Length: 104
Image (cartoon, rainbow, N blue to C red; front, side, top):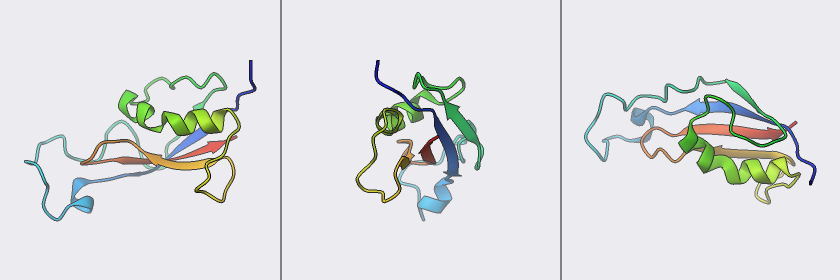
């Protein structure tokens, strides 16, 4: 089996819809606030098995997993000068969460 690496995911920013839109493109709902699953600055470790950590939002995981897989198997992303690093976000179009992923 190929070597795999442990990764650290850091929550860089949970966005509020008011930061992204002057006027929301949809009707405001009570859940349209910064994501409650994470906290800014929170760090989450991904073990060498590259499985989704307990409590991680499945939608966010599926969105960032291509970068998890690349870094976990020792690859690098061509659009960052830093090796072993990615910045990615979930696909929530109203209140995305931005993550930094690092090979450790």
